[in-house]
Every structure is written in C-alpha cells, then in structure tokens.
Image 1 (tube, rainbow, N blue to C red):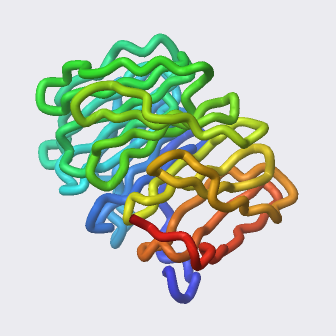
Image 2: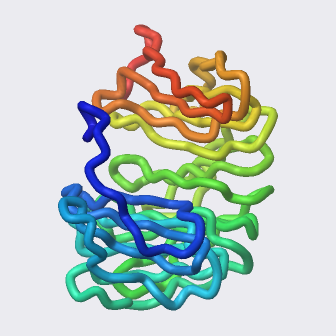
Length: 261
C-alpha cells in the first residue's frame, strides 16, 4: 500500500532473480521479467498469474506497457524485443536487428513508434504497426537507457561513456545535441512532464538537470555518496527523486528560476 507501506501480496512463479517490474497504465496488473528467461503478468488485486511471456533465450530485462494497455514490449539479453497483445496474450512479432543485449524498449506517447536500445552501441526506432525499422541511431558507447519526450518528437539515449545524445525522430534521425558533464556512465534519463528539461542519473554519484532545448546544464544534484542509478520527476515536474547505491533516496526541489516549457 502506497500510503501505509503494508504489504498487499507476494507474486510467486519465477525460478531466478526478478530484474524488471512494470505496471500497466491502469495499475490493474503488473509485469515482471526474470533471469529465468521468462516474463509473467499478475493481477495486482489477487496476485494470481494471468499469463506468461515465453520464447526469449536469455534473461528478460526490459518491459514496457503501451499507454492504452493493449500492447507490451519485452526485451532480452538475447538481443530481441517481442511485441505482445495483452488482450489475447499472444505475441504479435519480433523486433530483431540488434547485435547484443537489449537494455531498454519503450513506446512513444501514441504507441505508433517503438524505441530500442542495446549494448551494441545503437538505438533503433521501429514502426509499431508493421514492425519495420525506421531509424538506426549510432552511438559512441553502450546505450543504457532511452526516453521519448511527451509528444514523441525527441529521443534521449544515455550512454556508458557518460554522455546523452538527443535525437529528432519526428521526421528524420537528426542528432540535436549531446549532454556532456557526467564522468561515468549514465544509467537513467527522462524528460520532465512539460518537456523543457532532461534529468540524468550517473555512476559518478550525481544527478543532473539539463535544458531539453539546447542541452545546457541547469543544476547538479550532488549529495549521494555512491552511484545514482535512477531518477524521476514528480507528476508536476517541481520535485525530483533520485535513488543511489548508498541505500538512500533523495527528494530535490527544482530551482525556482527553471521553467519547464
């Protein structure tokens, strides 16, 4: 329970470590991915397994529901991403083309596009309707995380070298700018709700806030004593949450002179 902290249920079924968890849009079910090569979808109220994701030949490490809840992506160390129909519990098809492990897969806001990232140093944009590759985006290092902006016009790709590349993916695959300042790998990147900022988390122990218009550094969130592996904006975009290997989470207030548009 989000208010009381009381455990509501335990989800059983995997035979190895669970490495990814994803809620559906309505928070009625949850998908889990495991090192046992499978995914499972559970009813959140009862804890009962509804259906399973099979077919991957290595660890299932990435999951993403579409905003309407009708589709689910699963990405694996086997270098493949599968697209599933959550209404029929059936696989629609595969997004194959990466040469190494998948790190991230996600839909854009209207579910017409899919972005995939891999440690093969590439990201790819696919048309969800025909499963065809639209853009192939080369990077300097492993792609560890991806984020679409709220209208699906830009894609941010976090790299193992501490950089984040921001691409225009609306009409073409144009590199807009590169965020440079972290001294170790960037494990998480996200756009603010209004689309005016980008937030990054890094193994250098900091999170950073950037302008999504020109890549200018706006604020350094320095205070953790170990790697920062995740970060997120609040619903309004006024508060930032960071999580670290120092066993703490921290809440930060955005500086008042920063405008999210």
